[in-house]
Amino acid sequence: MEKPRKRYIQQFKQYPDVVSVLTFREMLGGIGDSFARKLIHEGLVKAIFIKPHYWIFKESIIDYVSVSYTHLTLPTIL
Image 1 (cartoon, rainbow, N blue to C red):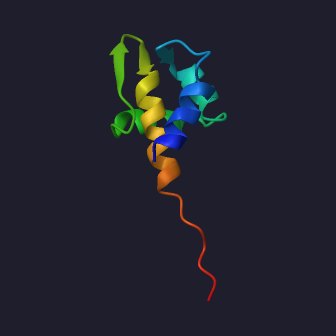
Image 2: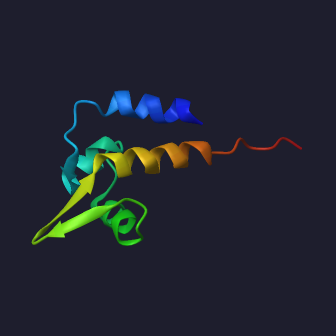
Image 3: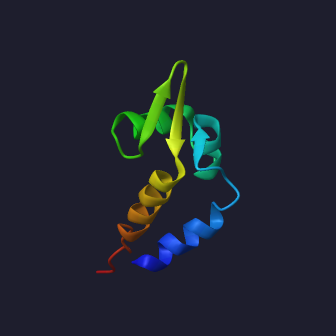
């Protein structure tokens, strides 16, 4: 379980500890603005709002992608 987290820590090393929505979208492979904001509003990533921008914590992004990675399932063959 710790292995994916270490991988993402290394992958996101170049980014600052707090990132904008635009950078957050880039970190997740170019997700859309609506989906990025949905993740923020649903509390799946921790962010602060300093009008007029959201700022997302890199540790929260790493937590999100690490948990998402562990919940992937392989298709079952019948």
